[in-house]
Amino acid sequence: MSHTPSGSLWGHAFQLRPHQPRNVDFIQRALSVLNRGDCDTARALLDLAHAHICLAEAEARAEEVESVAAEAAVEQQRALALKARADADQADADRAEAAARKAAAESAAAESQVATVHARAEVARAEVAALEAEDTARLTPVERAVRKVARLILAAHHTIPASRKPQAPDMYAVSLETVQDALRVSHTVAGQRRQAAADLIANGYTGDCDLSLSGQ
View 1 (cartoon, rainbow, N blue to C red):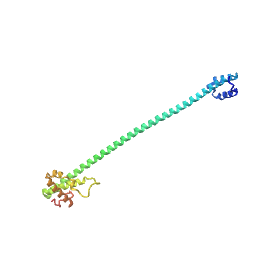
View 2: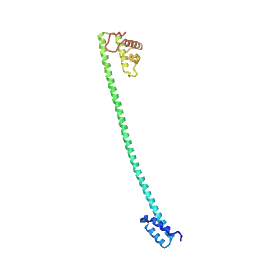
View 3: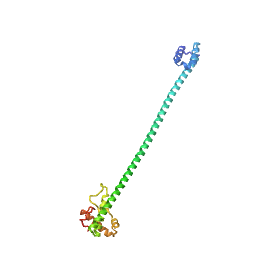
View 4: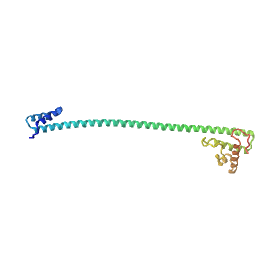
């Protein structure tokens, strides 16, 4: 039997008393055997009670950790859900932006097409007016041809964007092949008519029904 002072065991037993609800049997048995002077058995029972108390505290801490972990998992799931919604909203915004860009591009293309049609109509009306004026003025075929090429050069000049448009119309904006097709003449004659048209423009011809300038 151990010679451990019984007084220290009594103190140990009373220190464990706050935890008695879970260790009543061990502590009561320890006190009983301690009263009989069996310190070794009392210590063993108190150690067992203390072990149960430590186990209970460890289990309580584990439950607390599990609770915190569960709350963290819930927060993580909430964060993932928020991110998923944010990603979905961003995807919707991207699709809306892409649709808006497509609509804007289609609108711009339609406006450009309308402007092109209007420009062609204006060119056609101007051509008709010029031809009628030429008929009235009884211009020669060469004069008519030169003016026609001059109007082609002026029309090509008007289609050049303002940022790249030269100050004066350039006869080379209209190829000799285009002049050949328009006048149904040879390559040499097309070159002559284009040069004459450039000279006519340089002298002030604007493509309107102004027949005061010679086409020669």
